[in-house]
Length: 80
Image (cartoon, rainbow, N blue to C red; front, side, top):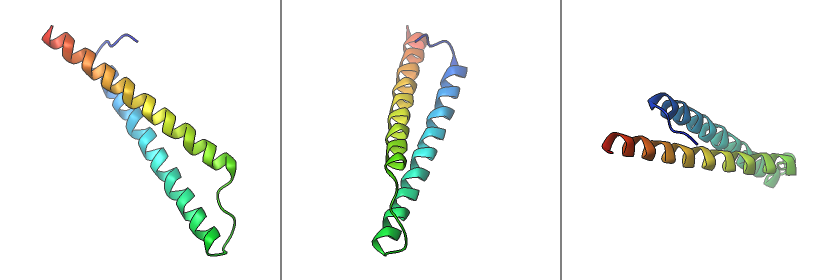
């Protein structure tokens, strides 16, 4: 991946923050569904919900790795 500018870093940061927010909201929803299920107030999350959560975690991690790589490359470019 070519790390070209602060704009790319800003875009990656925004994408990582959005992914974190989506993962967090999905996690909270799953916890509420499990809680309701344990109290006899409905079913727990479906397998598809858990798979979606796992995909969001992987996406979030990948974006944070890209963000770290880009920030590191820009820092080296500034120092080098």
